[in-house]
Image 1 (cartoon, rainbow, N blue to C red):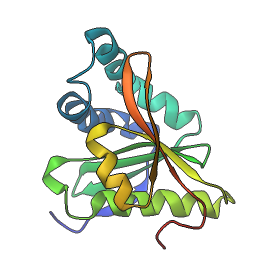
Image 2 (cartoon, rainbow, N blue to C red):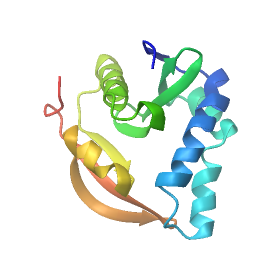
Image 3 (cartoon, one colour):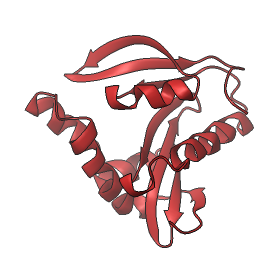
Length: 158
């Protein structure tokens, strides 16, 4: 891993973001889902879907190693952590935490002062707990299971 750069993503990054995310979703998230639910989730991870969200106002940032995108974070409406994925090759090196810190700061700089939420996969719940998020409840929406979590305002790491 070279020195990582972090930057705001744009719609031209959508192909690389999708190429990073889809294998991670397949390996860590959709395996217990019914095929139709897995298909719906994977359909939301196409390059076209990422480009649409980026253009539509979701704030995406990426971690770049050389020319490769190795991590991505997205927030929706400054309050909801929408996506956070990191390549297996850089997991456990602080990249996900750095991406979250970047997204959190961007939301705060945009004037958001409230709680943060995330719909975590069961695989990622422990990571979010380390960031200070608390479990609200387990939920299933359209066959996609997740853990609703909240980070109360003022309790996040600085």
